[in-house]
Image 1: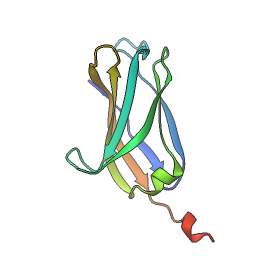
Image 2: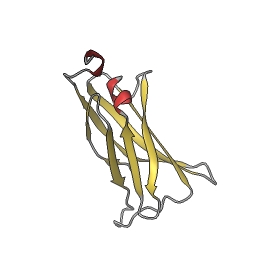
Image 3: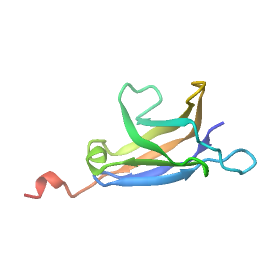
Image 4: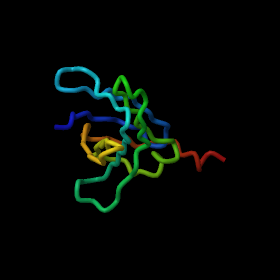
Length: 116
């Protein structure tokens, strides 16, 4: 079962968070030989999805980096989204959802395109 974690991102800004993934006994999941992918959308059934920049940050300690550039977050409308993070074992292709939750994109007032 995936761990639940909610995230808050300011629209139009750079965002990055490091998330540690653990086994049920509290030890880190060794993410060596895994790939990671993460997406968000308005609902589980939405056809529009946004990719999160997901990468293994520290494989042995089970750390994953999730982020968006300011350009990416600027293109996402403010509001609540669902997201998840999946890992894929590179040798077997077995996938597992390890994190899921809600991302809240808070609206921005200052628009970079207006500052000329």
